[in-house]
Length: 318
Ligand SMILES: [Zn+2]
Image: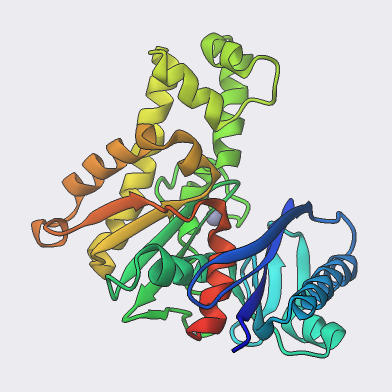
């Protein structure tokens, strides 16, 4: 019998991950390219070209193509996948699924990147061990996906799961969404970089600056300075973990998931340095009932999680 494969594309604001894998979760091929800075049409043309190459490649290897899926930044409707006012992409309104499917002459399943990441984690990261799961990504922005009873929770129009825009501190910094003190405005990679920049300008971030060694300062340098015991870096790490834990505790009290899985560049980069205090503070802030079996982990699917999500969407359905 021919090997069945799934083709997936994970569109990010700066990078596009594309590849193919098997329904049981083996990635056979993957590649990363920069996201074109042009119009949505140019980005769609490029993605269609990448998928067409993958289709040709699969056919050459005598694979049978089970389906094609794409993960895109939100907010977007589901299942039509109309991207609306995306702050990450800077797109106003793009009928993504329709446009991409038309270019390929094939139907493409499209959902929000964080929803598909949650689905990928549910099937391939946790092997369906838990029927409810909360996935949170901390990278340039903060987003999430909620699996309830084995299904992605989409909400009424598809906009569910925008957890980065949960207000944590009403007096906090302005967020791109127009409100103040959203989790994303306090604890995303972008927020961390802004915070560090201010600190360095004020002359209080010398050790963090040294760790940066002339590169653009970010979460990784903060982590390094904190590991070296720099008091400013330790203080920022404490604030960061407290903000994230407060957001997670709110969600745990509402949804009572058995597991919270975290991913994204900031989480992967800071690892246990961020995970351990998040675990401790979250557990302090939820009810004993919610705390009893609660697991908080970092995904083992790394930054391929969006591709796993595409594979899950086709292999298991959304
Ligand atoms: Zn916001």
